[in-house]
Amino acid sequence: MILLYAIAPSAAGLSVLQTEGLCLHDDGELAAFFEHRAGAPDRTMKEVMSFGRTLQLIWRRTSLLPIRFGTEVHDEAELAALLDEHRQEWLARLRTVCDRSELIVHLPKAEPVPAEQLPAAAGSGRDYLGAIAERVRAENRVIDELRDLLAPFAEAERALPAVEGPRRAFLVANDNVEAAESAVAEWVDRAGLHEVRVTGPWPPFSFCGEVEP
Amino acid sequence: MSDVERISGGDDVALVDLVDRLIGGGVVVGGDIVLSLAGVDLVYLGLRLVLAPAHRVDVAALGNAVNRP
Image (tube, each protein chain N blue to C red):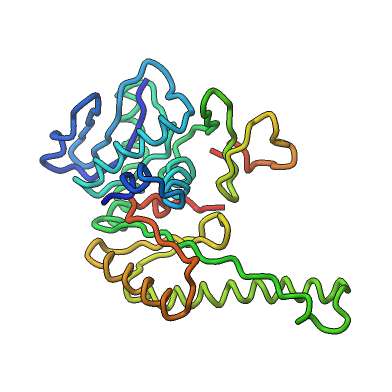
């Protein structure tokens, strides 16, 4: 069984990554990083983190499309067929993410409107829904501010599943990562949004062409 | 310092993002996810990173958020 890690553009020098079990299948256009396994990887946090570390190691060397953890094929013949099947799609995606990183921004969840600020008829269903709508609008205003702030740096954006508050992923050229992080840090200080957190730079997990739910 | 190193140092937010993206992002060819930690099966939910013992999760209520491909 083969566990897939990433697809990268074929390039000289990738073979240096073939260490400690990591293998490379290079067909001249696409290169796939994989590992031979006796069976499917354990679905453990330890395995997921190990997978993440290997992916970061590859990503330091080349632009890539990360493969979702747990993706397996039987053998290299099946891997070759997979590359053939998705060749044009993956080459196009690689052009989109080449020399770019993903930054993830966690935004604060808007606080509910305090009861004393609700209209006199508070408690009615209408007021309740109105308070929720205002909360959503407040979150959207912060998202819009962030989007405007990162517009000079970000080439694409994805909404990610919320954690505590809204979460957005931005695709940023590697050369612009520090500037984008600084812009967010200045905005956080200026606006007093101290719950905002930025993580990354990550491989472009959210920009591989899949539509997130 | 890389994010993986920060995670080793206890950065929970980065850990959430990394795990979430490793099992919820990237190129999808197939597969499903059930994680286990210390021998207890855990279920990953799509809307937010919640790792809960599988036997406590109401799968019917979660719909296709559980074990999404």
